[in-house]
Image (tube, rainbow, N blue to C red):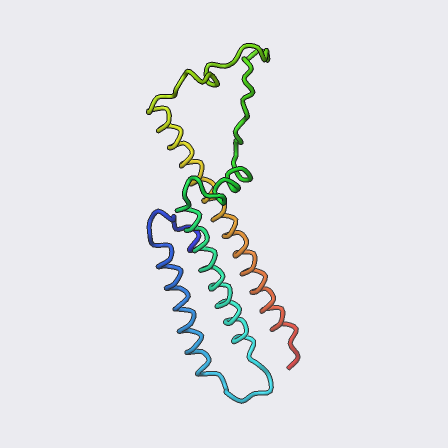
Length: 166
């Protein structure tokens, strides 16, 4: 659920830590009801410990996503992720015109032509929006990974109960 909260809202870490603390309190209260001396460990206790561990990993993943969200434009991680996850990678201009003649340079590559301030601002805004889309893709990736881990651990828990010999 925490992966659906946008990083801009400022509530991502609050929700993440609150759910982690709720798991800790619930785990503590459940452990107080379980017998302290037993031949076997209760499967429910193992399951809750696995869920607590997954939630702790979710906190780490959320910290990583927030770090990505606030990364500076010149940072290496931002450049690498933009290069790898960008939907439309930048095409290198070689100084040729649209017909492919290398003798006639493009006006954009001419050193005498300077882009105005407005064009630079538009370029920065577009790069920032592209970066936020990349951060959303990373957040979606973490959501899918943790959903898969949750489903596998829950199925493992129910399989252990079903095949347990009493």
